[in-house]
Image 1 (cartoon, rainbow, N blue to C red):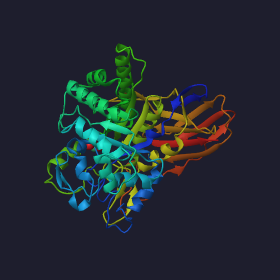
Image 2 (image 1 turned 90 degrees about the vertical axis):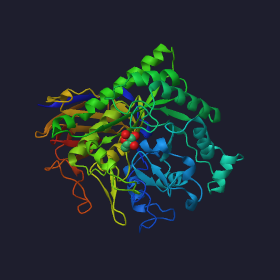
Image 3 (image 1 turned 60 degrees about the horizontal axis):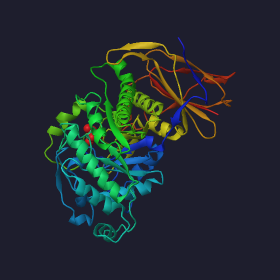
Image 4 (image 1 turned 180 degrees about the vertical axis):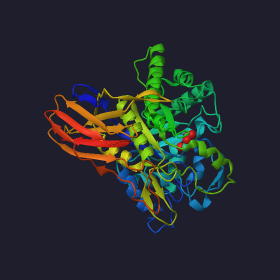
Length: 500
Ligand code: AHR
């Protein structure tokens, strides 16, 4: 049967913050070294950045880029990562059992962002695992203070006269996780986050601060953690973070395809918790959500990979090679974020290059797009404007993990020029899904494009030897007539339908 919904410009969710299309660069595996930075690569520029990767990052359309971790940040000494490269120490990275050479550091990260272009903004995490308030404000002074103090003058001496202007800061990373170096209880973390936030605001009242929420909805402490942390930090922070990764378990593809059901409930539960704390505190302030790690990640394979390491430099780690199915799920996760754009105003696809990433590289070799590159790039490009309130009337199917789920997952975004883009996923593995969209009060006359990511082989992947195997194609038969859009969504597909 047919899936249906109505679009009406009078019913909206909110305006998309461009920072919804962020990503993440961690000192992990080959994300930095031989990913974005490889001075001996034929495409490297004078700063050692791979220009082939820079081009793909621009095409991907990412906005904020979170750095330097991740679990890595809980052992991070920012001082090691600045100044003359030959003087920088090599350190053990406890999080990933590797050796960090510090050849790429804070200044190189800022140079990388500036080369991507004006829409790339920093999002810097401070270490609240093994360090605290003092180191956070020293880093802030080094990075942002114009001049005339020891640390700001040191930055200039290091070659960066202009301040870095880092506005968005994460107060630690996944501090609820027992795996985190310096892991804390909610009470302990709430206090250090509050004190760090207070001190950072003494330097600059306009910084934007993200408190750590739970590293997953499945954590035993979920929701109680957010409640305790926000009780301490409500007036001092702007965001609470969410992290979620999804993978196919034991061949249960039906459940995997419905992963966004979990993501949407996670978002709604965190919104409820934030607003509950706000109500208790009688506050008019609203805390927004920073979904600063999300992706498909075959995490069940990672523990063994990491524990086998004997402190190598930039090993191959978390290099998931994504299928068409993974890309459709990632598209559905993007739809989930857009559907909550009123409260989720920052989000970071974890990560950017090589490590669970849309872009892959070979050292001294090529760079290419994974299947997951395409839905992200399309959403980042066309998911700008007002999100329309989409309530689907869809046939359903049963899943073991997420109960009964709609076969159609969809959202729509109206740009400033009045054009509308529908993003839709057909979760059904075998049947096409007819779609009808009634357009109320929208001056739209034609279908500009219907792009589909689907394949006769849902396990198809792009690899070094076949980097162009998977790419979106044009759908046929999509029409707009008499105020109704009619399309057929291929089985297991991600669809972008642009209306003008
Ligand atoms: O993105 C990979 C890891 O996942 C990050 O380092 C950590 O924050 C999360 O557990």
